[in-house]
Image (cartoon, rainbow, N blue to C red; front, side):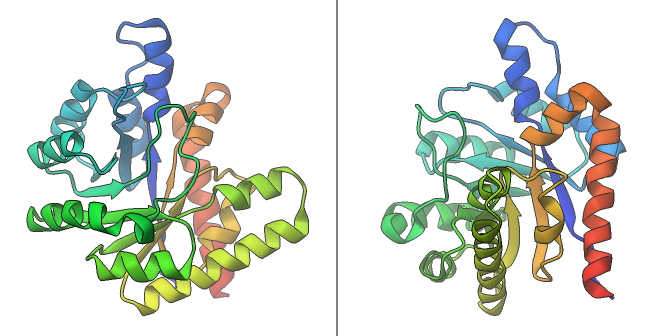
Length: 251
């Protein structure tokens, strides 16, 4: 029987809308509650250095008020490590971060930066926090992620989604095959496999159908679609598509 895929809902951009005007509305913690009611398996939030969306108080409230596992996305900096250790979330996903980027532009270069990243993995592991590394679906990055002690890799699906949007079917198929191959390799190395970035109703099913994928983290699309359909319905629909993909793959 096919194993279900967990859905983590990233609520960052609820905070983006709030911060555009200031004040308290819309409340990302309220969004997290609605996502939970709609069947989300976890909540993801990225506390950036510049606090452009999620803020410190949001992390405090999510840790205190939400029963679902919190996946805390963080850059490998001492400031973020201190915050992570203070709140002890279920998981920390270490991501690349550049102040000038609109959103995360690619995977973390674990191979090139392993000496810097490894101590963060060690300290989070020692605190009993599950460590995920957000990387490109690349064999070298996978090997180094395993070597420095991560238990999870989350593959960046942005290039695949961009190719789909551009209508480049050959490129879309090529990038999907690359993700599939990386998922198999990571699983063989004993790593739990997650994926995310840019996934929509139109692109999620081929990724959800990959047998080794255990969790998908999706945010921007769900929050954007919620403007038109409401967050509960949007999350429920995404959950149904993920389940459908898994069922079809097992048939």
